[in-house]
Image (cartoon, rainbow, N blue to C red; front, side):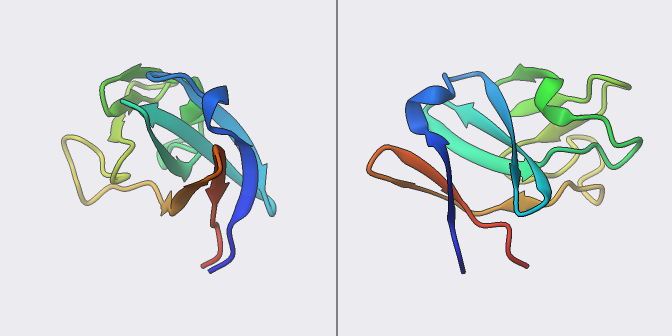
Length: 102
């Protein structure tokens, strides 16, 4: 698995997100209580950028239609069968590394 350096860990404050593009893939990074999580930055309903949604704890609400996803698992909070792809994250020397390889 190949990891790519995307930003400094301190660049994403707890309760905030950051949109990045990694190898052609749009990724949303979320800081949940100091832990960084990465999901695809597109709602499966209409493709709205989840990084722009309202974050509450470990859930993000799609800014277009309010669908809520758990950013730690990618699962929709009411219908877990509906998911957003997640990506592995590592923190090395204060840098956020993400793997988007299949």
